[in-house]
Amino acid sequence: MKMLSAALLQLDASNGSKKYEDISKEGFAARLIRLYGRSGMFEHAYKVFDEMPKRGLMSFNALMGACVNAKKFDKVDGFFKELPQKLSIEPNLVSYNTVINAFCEMGSLDSARLMLDEMEKKGVQPDVITFNTLLHSFCKNGRVGDGEKIWGKMVEKNVAPDIRS
Image (cartoon, rainbow, N blue to C red; front, side, top):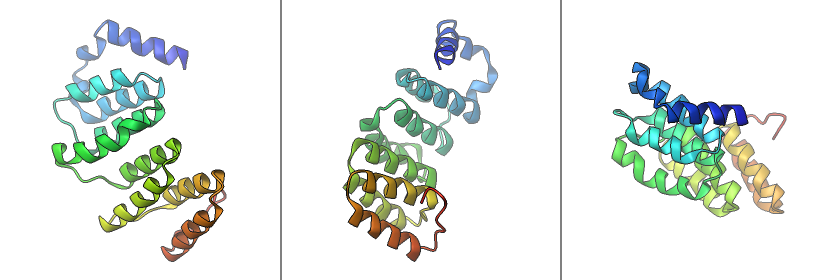
């Protein structure tokens, strides 16, 4: 991880990312955003996102993931509420799973549960990752009854449990 951080800082210091034509491609920029996030360098991740000429769902999800990886959980909800309209995108399953994970990491389990309801209202079907994140967090925090309700919802939605479930 230290080597990755050093390499990204060197790239940033030399302004090396500007040398590559691929930086204007969303996939390349999204990978940079994710790498900065994994390295705990959220400010750099946001700078790449902010300077992108064209931002879409891929870069949005990368930024949200960078928030979680860099433990900037408090930023996730604001970005989730603000950016989709600004970018003219609709959050997808990855977006919702990231927000649910962030709420769980913050200990805001009721907000995470409400996000499950919101995603269903928007027509986004939860998957085993969605349910496992909620199950783990509710049970870890001693809210087994709520975990059982999540399990019931999982069964109702015909989402097959895996070994983690």
